[in-house]
Image 1 (cartoon, rainbow, N blue to C red):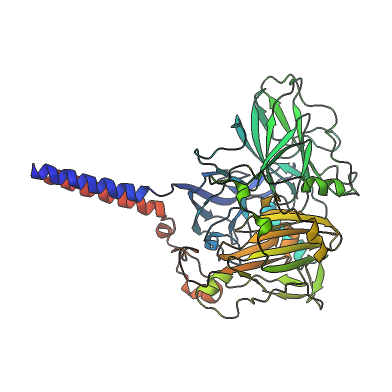
Image 2 (cartoon, rainbow, N blue to C red; image 1 turned 90 degrees about the vertical axis):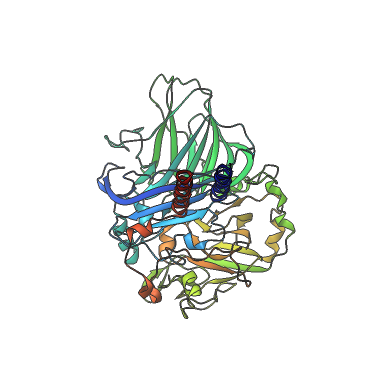
Amino acid sequence: MASSGLLGLSLIHIALLLSFCFAEDPFVHFDFEVSYITASPLGVPQQVIAINGKFPGPVVNATTNNNVEVNVRNKLDENLLITWSGIQQRRSSWQDGVLGTNCPIPPKWNWTYQFQVKDQIGSFFYFPSLNFQRAAGGYGGFIINNRAIIPIPFDTPDGDITIMIGDWYTKNHTDLRKTLNGGKELGMPNGVLINGKGPYRYNTTLVPEGIDYETIDVQPGKTYRLRVHNVGVSTSLNFRIQNHNLLLAETEGSYTVQQNYTSLDIHVGQSYSFLVTMDQNASTDYYIVASARFVNESLWKRVTGVAILRYSNSKGKASGPLPDPPNDEFDKTFSMNQARSIRWNVSASGARPNPQGSFRYGSINVTDVYVLKNKPPVTINGKMRTTLSGISFVNPTTPIRLADQFKVKGAYKLDFPKTPLTGSPRMETSVINGTYRGFMEVILQNNDTKMQSYHMNGYAFFVVGMDYGEWTENSRGTYNKWDGIARSTTQVFPGAWTAILISLDNVGVWNLRAENLDSWHLGQETYVRVVNPEATNKTELPMPDNALFCGALSKMQKPQDITSSTTSISGSKLSIFFTLLMIYAAISTFH
């Protein structure tokens, strides 16, 4: 009896240990092999960046609070980093995938990202952040589903469809990079892709034969959630589906007030969820269109993406002209009013049971104000550069977060100006000094003639105002202080401003940048450094064991060890599990 009691007690201990090991939030694991393939999305063979042999790459599917592991093997011939656009990596800018925080993954190496999608839901995407690589692909969708106990503010859709749209050049990304570095602009793109494919041949003059196009199959009467991302280089796109309404439901992690649109402008780096009901009679297929905005329509007709929406009972091919875009090429008021109409659903639950609107941002005192002004490209030291407030950012050789960790002096300057410089523009590694738990107001002033998008890693900010002209103190009187949308990427119209509010509660070093690749590549970015004066792992996770070293710390980097580099937290859990099983087996044998 005593031995059986001992065995029973041992089993209880093992059960408790196992429950302890596996009781925390679940892990989901993905393997990315990033390589070149040859593809012809616009009918011209070219080098494309694929993930696991596919372009676009796989959709990362996770659930609120999951721990996400992505093991990235770099089979390119140049350095690589993957960044997670819009994912608020709580307490862990170590996993952010941009040069200000991470050393790049060298060719033939692999590296495992580990981060938690804590208290998040929504539609996002990932992409390579270095060397203009996004212009060659390497991107894919990232979905964070709500937990079952948290209701969504609409009926569960009958299907979930990810759509990647973006302008596309038939030149390699290396050639595009050389063009910019040589002081020239990229010029008009060669087309627009939808899910990595070229346009359906809706016009025999504009679209040549033999181009593969995307077809989305649906069932009549069903409602689908379409997650649409603009992953292009620099072109704003108008998205529409022939004869179908787009019911906007979510953008970049925030549920929106549900409104119907016949079309919506989606700017570079932005993501939206639409609920689309298949309520047509299916006499034919229907066009899905993504066309360039704010350009000369007659010159840019070739730069149009066209896919096909096909009902299961469709009676024929799509035909006739494409559905019209908004007719406001020279008057962007319609588009700005449309942007202002996108508001937060303050009665919906987010990733937690408490309502989204319980965060009363309009009553919080602002602690810091930064006016970030961009202008057309300038020449600095004989090079074409873009600027924010007169500073063209130079990426540090030692990432900022790593320099802080090892007290590397001179890696950057914590002196980014609160108002634009009045003197000559200059190239510097100048960073914004954010106040932990502060509430920052940022004015994005676009004094260029082109539409710009701005993104901040690690955060969702509140878009509280936008208008034409120069922002002034009086402009605050127009702010939306109740239901301004919380998102990570906002548009700034040419000759206009956009105001955002940011609650600096996420410790780390976070990239604030132009999402337009050409502007970003030439220096239109900075970082916001948020430090908790009290050293604690509760507000920032420690440096990961697999951290890469470069710059002043390059001597600390050990040669790649494939076995150790792919070991993950979940792998160590598995090891514990098998160890406990062995203990159990030994006890059983003994008795």
